[in-house]
Image 1 (cartoon, one colour):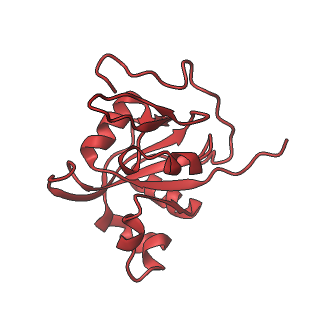
Image 2: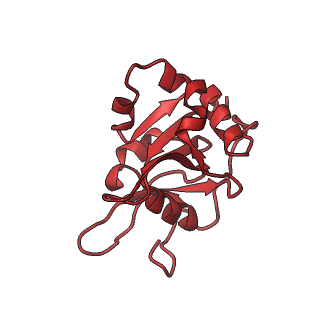
Amino acid sequence: MRERPARAWVGVVSRGHVLRGVAGGFAQLCHGKQAPLARMSMGDWLVYYSPKTEFPDGAPLRAFTALGRVVGETSYRVDMGRGFVPYRRDVTYLEEARQVPLSEIASTLEFITSRPNWGMLARRGHFEIGTGDLGRIAAAMGVRVDAISVPVTRRPGSPGIPNEAGL
């Protein structure tokens, strides 16, 4: 069996939602859609870019807010009540990663410098970036992602079950 190199992804999510995902050990993208989660594989990296503090009316933030590794084999649904049943995927986050304003590193990121209007890319809510950009973002966040192609093992209890807080 040949190992596939890990890929790197950006999820565009408000910081408030990112913090709930980090606390619960999951990713939820594009208002709970399954497709973005299905594009990722175990071992892939996910970095969150948060344009705002809260959705929909939070203050502008424009920062990278979390970085983690996909550990769940598949996505799963969680009933959050009132008919909202989003898809989630288990992710182990690097807790030591610090928030980094986009303005501090934008000029070093290829996915920004190679596009005249990278905001159109961000509007997708989820997109792939090169591992070089991932490394630059991680370094700015104070963490390392050296082992990009090391296999990951499944977390006990995956797929995740919401905790007492409903996360």
